[in-house]
Length: 339
Image (tube, rainbow, N blue to C red; front, side, top):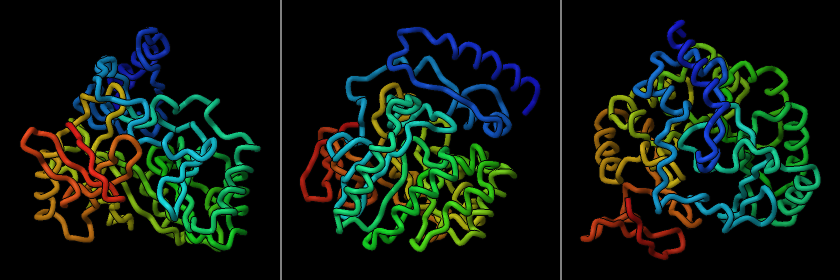
């Protein structure tokens, strides 16, 4: 990080502490050193700066933007536990992240410690999982589960390890990329279990794959942990074919299989990140000519209202004459969707 970048970031952080009251909602902000060091230009043309540094554009809230754009609440069975799909649950054990993405679909609850799970909440969630034998996979999210201490993670994993019908334990995290030194021997020891462990890395641009991030990813791979990646298609960050192709090649070179390319969710104050479905489809089609099939993630839309993810590059999403899209959910029900 250049001294010029450091100066601009220092001024930005100072101003963040005095965000105006009309910044609705009060989206949190934080930049770890690894993120600061990966910023090359201290302005919104830099793909890392744009993802993490607050912008006045966040104050522009569209009527179509939602507090809960993917409908978590519609499937919440208790605090911190989402049971949307029959065979798996989302375990939102913490509301804390090591960094706060400006496009986050949970940006209104992230960073508020009151939304993190207390011991009795965790007890209730584990009991629910044990009682529901159809659940074969537990997905830790939040917040970022890797901000928990290795001791707490180990305790959670051990409790799930005693549930026979749970086969897979998955973690969605940014930690290996934004705070890579946290991937240490204690964390790796905590992840050891008789279940299959999958770690899904969230990274949107190859510029995030610093030397430290690469070393952290290699540690996870050496620990025999299955590594997948997900990223969001973001205007001004990665909505170019070459940018995504480079990211996917770099990830696969590190042993990380590209898994999901998310169409941006309708979170409040995120219009400046949004691309149209049509643009996304064209980018995805062009990617097929740039990368091998095993490097290509699935391009998906999370239907607002809690109806689940569907592939965009298929008949699940059909353009209508009025410019809207007719989206079929996993139950066969149809929903109108506007860009």
